[in-house]
Length: 286
Image 1 (cartoon, helix red, strand yellow):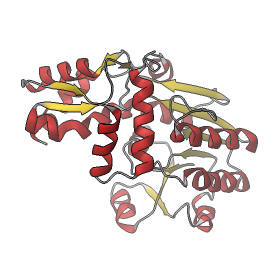
Image 2: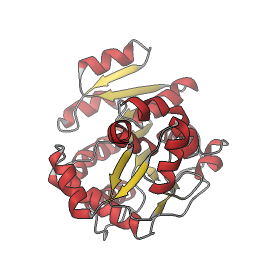
Image 3: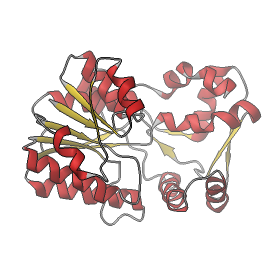
């Protein structure tokens, strides 16, 4: 049995979808009854719980031998994920697959990267077999630009001309599902990227081609970007972390590609051009 923590998020639901399609026994760990009911209607086994209530992990892990660990970015995520790791140890889980992030490093200037590195180390120290998945910037993140693209034909970020090899969450989910259901991935760290290096000017061109409308990327100073993120309701700590990531991207330090998607799944990674075509209506009408 595989327990998926984070089963209703953008990536977690893709992991569940892939496992269900492969008829692999899976249990989804969710926090609320409505989310549980929506999954049960699809025939998916559900455990309701909360990582801030560690006692809920015990029944969720009953009979589980593999764990997929994903939580939303949060200043408490090291403690939250740590509780899951400790509970997995007690329950006799044999393999933990953690969704981490490209650039995870205890010495990183970006808080999110440090937090992921801390949990990776805890898992490695636990004695449980592990696989760390480190995906790059998600293509789905560009849907956050859809409103301004639809209304103005523009989107804004502090990326300068930096190029990144962004990846589709569906490909990340496919990699995770294969790692969870096969042997031979233990002790591995997989950096998951898309197939190409793109600047945000390239992203604008692909969206323009898919929508048939003019789309322009507008570079903005980091301070202006952070102010806009906070004004939209984003917590200060998250705006600061995202700005730190953009600084790394803008400096050209996250542009390399890997073949992990194809190597693990046997299928090529989706291109951004394909993603833009599939989401053209969102970019037109958000």
